[in-house]
Image 1 (cartoon, rainbow, N blue to C red):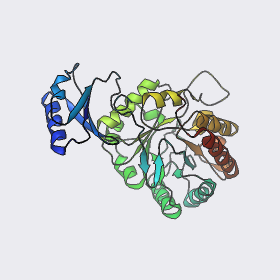
Image 2 (image 1 turned 90 degrees about the vertical axis):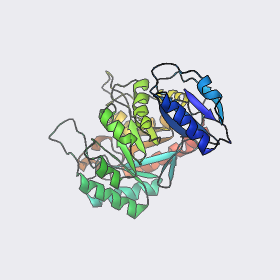
Image 3 (image 1 turned 120 degrees about the vertical axis):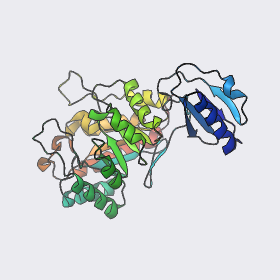
Image 4 (image 1 turned 180 degrees about the vertical axis):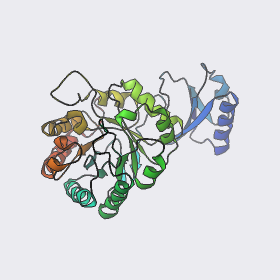
Length: 339
């Protein structure tokens, strides 16, 4: 259930509603909106009687929520959520471009790539310090040394940085250095990690799992928001199918579906979907045409020497072309809802 407060509701009236919800053994989650506060009712064993709240001072309405993902759903919050990362705003009306190497290899490598992508129009820098790899014998990342390099990139270029956090043990460390924390596809249903992300003060980038349905993906976001962190961006990165012409199959239908179902921003990672450099540009154009709120693209100035995912990394000049093309498409579409 969602308890919608009146525009003129006082903090004391909001607190009274919270107390009534908690007295029923439920959890109250205040949700700031455009001009009013709503309060989500969580952990209720069954339907609640709206009359419990309708008569309380400051309450405008009490609305049943039919979706299992209560906080993520547009039933709870009709307006699009905007996520602030440094001075970058991710959400409706903006096209956010995140770019950088798959893995941070050295300070010179990171700063060189960061200079290229910023010049082309990237808003944020992405790079892995901790790398979950299929093989235990491949490059696993520089760890804290890589995080320090990311901080140097931010200091030098002014771009906020996003990097993956793999487990709860390293969460505090990554949280200290990064502006935005990524939960990767392999960890989409790592519920301990999701709960810790829900306690974070950092925005979270949540990637879709390798074979996750959209409902499972949104429920993973619900885990984060249920702990109190409403700063969540979703990332479609392709799902595993039977094809061999690309690493994964990019599910572009997820973009309009998520935009209809949820108020959270959704971006697309064409690099991990394709696994091949020549597919990244056309998939990026398609993602923006489908009204994604942004892209996360891998770029490397020497991809043939990259320690991770060189085959899918764009050369800087290719990323420059990508930026010009997707911005032109975005300007035509306006980034608005297609329905």
